[in-house]
Image (cartoon, rainbow, N blue to C red; front, side, top):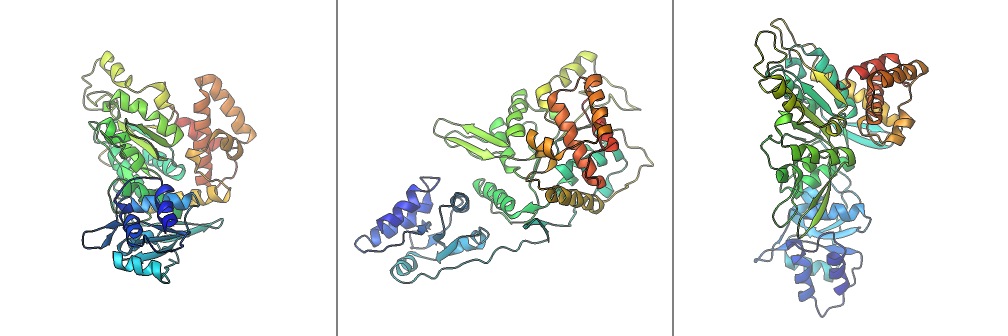
Length: 443
């Protein structure tokens, strides 16, 4: 009996919390009995009435142990089975109260083996892995008037999970495009759905396990602690980590603090957020697509046809200098948007754009990619982003003409790879590369 409790406590990622109430109570209640359950973990909060209750840490705890290969069976609160059944590969012994837990350990436990989770929406099976998605578009790209270039860039960004920056006058549709991006993002594998749910539990939310990538949009007045995580005593999860496997949108980008923008470089590059506090050091996964919008100048009228810009050259320069070159180098797609004309109409729907994303996603997975194009490392870029001879020559000329950095070259190749996937081409040709070059940052 002592070994059962010791395993539940010592081999857990966290060493504190109410989820250890049940094993401690069982240790006291069965102190003089010999019960050998070496392969059984016990978790649960215990109420004063003897009822076994769940906690917000239980799902992340079991998922972490499962990912480490340390757990096969667990005694858990019966009320937690609604969401614990989503974690595959664990046999559960659900109990409602302390009496049931004692009886189960003394006799034959009623083990429950969930057969797997069925998520709402559709399933796409590729290379032996199931991916889940939904064809629901509460906010549709058909409502975006004009802005064909920006919508094309949004499609490319979604298909490869590329970082995107849109610049344009107020009211031209930047936020509209960002809000609609979430619903056309690529499908999620089961392990990604579980990772999203884990972060939501850590934030105190109850996940709905919907196959929809998360989207976060912190305000530019938000503190660094709320964006990246933190707290006085414990390192709590922040907006960036809550966008894991989804997207984060920064509106009015230059108005975010300089410290926040520079701190954003690390998770954009390493796909993790590191938080250090006096009592704890925590690292959260943060693999997200970064989307941002900004005005061309402080007053917003620099690109306007009818309104005059009130900003001086010094003010415009100071406004733009809030964004450093190392930060901007981590963004793949740059789009300058024009004002909407009276006769502009919606040209493409979210459903049509989503079809293109699904086709490009299928090509990436069938090619053997673990990550989507926007998240490839340099070795993977060399393997998967191969240019034909004409495209190679054009890129070499562009490097000389525009003084492209190494990071910019890699970014252009990744964008060109996604464009080729959208066009159904296995090799990156002249057309795809030229379009990718058109989205580069102008210095």
